[in-house]
Image 1 (cartoon, one colour):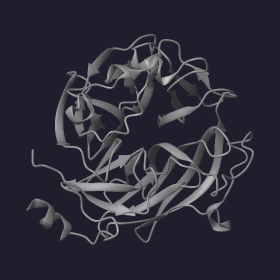
Image 2 (tube, helix red, strand yellow):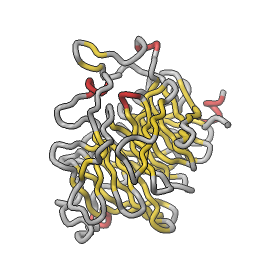
Image 3 (cartoon, helix red, strand yellow):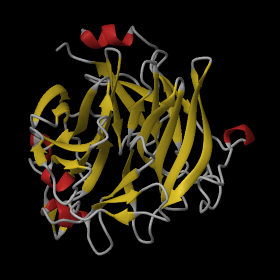
Length: 347
């Protein structure tokens, strides 16, 4: 009954149909990460596939449209700030993964995007709320070190940029499923010529990443531990604490609607034979549909409150991110060809 009422709130594309407990918005290929623009109805979704780029999602109309197509008025390179950037991102190749949105002024934000499309780097966009609708303008990029593939990105107010690498050269997904340390956090600081690895940040599968409004802490998902590690920015030689998620594998982590939320697939899924397995020396790709959970993380108390959870959905697998807009919970996926949404359960 709740799904029928939920569908009445908007007009999802009927080609997507409703699921058993989720509603869907088509037109977003592999929306691996999602961020909500605060105090608006808008969401930005990445597209983790060649040419998928970025999508702008109207949370009221339940419609996703391309956010960047490379036209002239969307390209305004800042050569002084990004002197080493080779040029604008090619929308035909744009393969977007992790996102980080930071407010810089009223109605203006800076968006950092991990890009794998034809080059491994961090794309930077201005986001301007013109007449209430976001407009994106590409400004530049920061190159990742040779051999390092970015996963998630986060920023601080002073301009510092952090990027996670899931598997460093010579390591594999199977390694971090076994609990071995495979990745790290890399940092670019104002005045630096490039990214450098932060000692003490090697974890089993460095995945989602977020900074704290206090400008002193940052949070790193250790996918192999299905946990979030809390770091003190001033002394990042080891985590201050590591918080294991209750029954799910966190992927991305973001502040949304004033809460630090992590989202991911169910850890022990009966429909998939339980825990993720290593078969013939390789970790399974988790194509079997798993349930999901979204948790609010209290990094000080080291506690997690489950905000929403669900059973496997035939039309939606690989939950990897979440964002809250009003009383609606949006879910991203690194596997699906759509976004999902549902009502946010009352607290």
